[in-house]
Image (cartoon, rainbow, N blue to C red; front, side, top):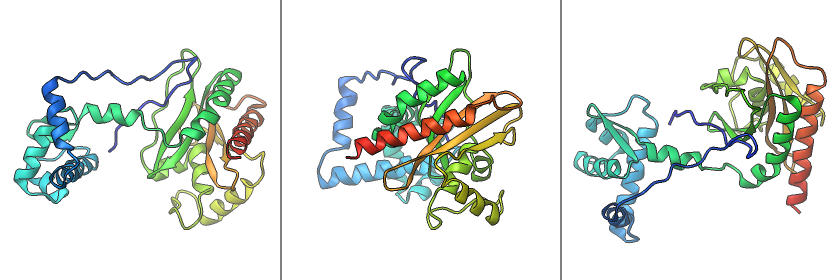
Length: 273
């Protein structure tokens, strides 16, 4: 599902809260019936997720016939499930085409890729944003997309749109860190950089003070510096990044970013004991 979502903000500078959902008694009863822990109920639940999964891969929506084909379900079953999901706000129908509904967005925004990592990083990322006077974030690479663990933004600064494809991600400082620190067998490296460049970058990131700098290569007028955060077992946990609206990076910013990454890594070390 290609839906842009805002990162979870530091409590001091803002917040993203779920929209309250008030269901009628009738809707609650229908929802309970949909997920009854019986064999039939399990089948219905499987079918509902098959419909949602098919729609999650269709940015332009799907008609009933195409949705049945994509989900592998009978047309009559797809129609019944889709109409039920519309009632709950999980699916919406526009001009006879089905799309993922707003309720799934609200639920998805509450997903935390790694709650322990977020707890360890929230305060250091907030401090980094205050000291750098710029947007600071910790992000991971998940299903070939950049995902926020946490972020903090000084007043008056706007979010940057996230790149939506691997090559665009790999041109950013954050993407370079995250791709280069993945085990070679786990990810296909985008060819916007040569294999030699990827090897050189991977080697350089073994330095605990290492940073990757983007001098407007990804976005005009935007400079970024990123540094990896490491789990105690040596696996990359994510990338700390500061994005600055400037033609060049302020002096001392790379050292500030790398020290923040080290601070988060030290917190993970303590929590893992």
